[in-house]
Image (cartoon, rainbow, N blue to C red):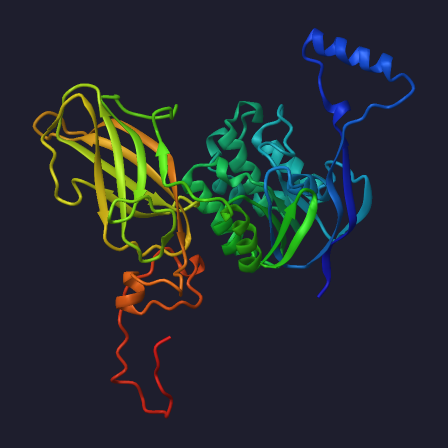
Amino acid sequence: MQDAITVSNLSKKFDISKLKKETQFREALVNFAKRAVFRGRDVKEEIWALKNVSFKVEKGEIVGIVGRNGAGKSTLLKILSKITYPTSGRIDIQGRVGSLLEVGTGFHWELSGRENIYLNGSILGMKKKEVKSKLDAIVDFAEVERFLDTPIKYYSSGMRLKLGFSVAAHLDTDVLFVDEVLAVGDVAFQKKCLDTMKDLRNSGRTVIFVSHTMSTVENLCPRVLWFDRGELRQDGRSADVIQHYVSQFGETEPDTKFDLTEVPKRQGTGTIRYTGIEFLTPGGQPKKQIYCGDGLKVRLHYVVNEPISKPEFYFNLKTDTGLRVATFGTALSGHEIRTLFPGTGYIDVDIGLLPLLPDRYYLNLWINTCDLLITEHDTNHDGLENAATIEIKAPDPDRSGNDLEDRWGLSKKGIDKWWGATFVPCKWNFDGLNDTGKSVENA
């Protein structure tokens, strides 16, 4: 198949000393002294954002790019989009190129939304008639019909993002570069964007997609490139590359206790506050490794600042894409706490079996009161997003005591997050299996 993108020995160097600004008189004075002392010699601070990168992308491929901040991902896309130029190496791209690298890229802020759509089309080499035929679809997707003739500079960042993505997705580009911008929009718009990205897989368009959301990359991109400190570390099947990339973060011992007393961003009245979380074994010891199917005790520490009646404790678990996989609450379990008085305390949540598949999950916590005799609405006293993380590991074949393994015969083979979010215990019955001479054995 024909190659849409060819990158050969690409490198990009930045001279940081020239990029730094002298914001204070003292900095200007120090720099002046350096130039006087090292007269005739260059004092440079250089960094290689990309080093000898080579790869090819076939026409119609959707390729993901992952890596830590500063790995060179955005620099690569800017070079491919010809926003900046490489220090050495070469690139070859076949066809029209569209880019969505940051909010407002490619827009003229003094022009209206309508004018910017036509401007982007003309930059891509499209005729006015071609752009006009797609105008309604672009505006409908971006949901900016009321503001179509308003200058872009008056748009919110979310509105500019919507219009920018809509233009990039609907105009006739052969190659599309998308950087980490989908997280800026609201949840409904993110879903629209992701659905559109999935449709691009069948359109024959070539897409390079950069994101820190691993599940989104894995679902959209059959192939992934992993960049590390400007170098291409791995190129291959998305599941394999992402697994290797994520595994590098698992070398440190996971936290079993989180202090929440100094969390700055929290909601609610403050009458009662969470002060900490602990992950414990059913016997009350710190649980450093949590496996799919384990029992778990979650200890929620709190402080009460004034008497409070009928508080309800809640927390939920979410994936990095925001998918809510489980919610735990005193009221949901049929418990009622009558009154709490000023002071500190804790409440334990005993989870007999945690059937979450291997992944990293985030905990959101909140405390409400709801008394229908007083008010029709809940009163929120505390709320924290992403207050803690919990790492679930695959079953260990060398250990026992795991209920999923012991009672339900959970396989030791291939249990990972790519199967979904949870493992639902079940039993298979083979009484009705057609006798074909094949034996049925436990995995």
